[in-house]
Length: 346
Image 1 (cartoon, rainbow, N blue to C red):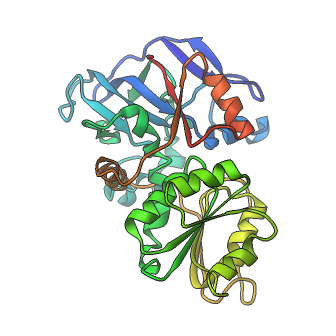
Image 2 (tube, rainbow, N blue to C red):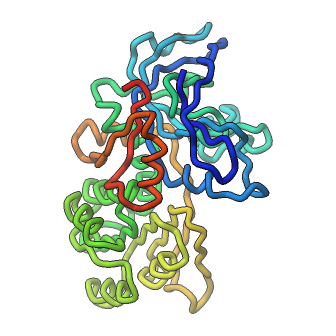
């Protein structure tokens, strides 16, 4: 089968021919219908050799959807032909967090060498994908896998981040979304559907701000030196009750810390390496700072239910597997609107 692999540190990913995985007991083989392209992949491929821990060669793709193609012995939860989405943050399945469905916070994954697909284990950017356990599959039903595969990360991650702050986002409140790309444009829709907050979106150019307005932002402003002053003006000098930074570089983290109101939340979702000092007089009184990771299995089910109700929709641009390296080039250049999706089987 064909697969997109990262094979050499510092090089472009390559489309290669590899064997179709063999299905063992308790496993599921998918024929992949769609795989999402993510900035996390770009981050992994930018790491120097001394910091790279994901193994080589690495089949990319931690956002995956497919049709059940073959079932291993003992698997009864699905049948051949079912359309499913892949829950990405795999865990041990035994610890307290995994028992609660929060495999994104598995306490044994690091010590047992368990890694998510595309981020250590073979990912979804291949014609076929092996799933270690059927609990890591969620039925898609009638949902279009191409339009919705990105919800497994670009929907689940902002949903998990926003859900914790919803008690602070009733009527008359303000939420700021920094970065309106793959995750941020879904985050805006989640905020519109689930909160009473006025949403202020920040990004670096008018095209991205136009997407933010299209998906529901009440205000869309440039992420520049005047951004904090504008947020304060729009909030009567109070600041935002919650700020969600989907970029995470130092300049955006600085904006997040300066724009939050007293008792507000700063949630740093982006993996740009920025950090926020916390201390008396350094940030607004009683402000909380969080750095969440992905989301739980039950939250993925909730996200897909929101898609079925038409509350969220991912802006997607599709690529063949042969054109997948180009998708990453365009992601790096910032010219993807919403989310890029690879179609390994056409």
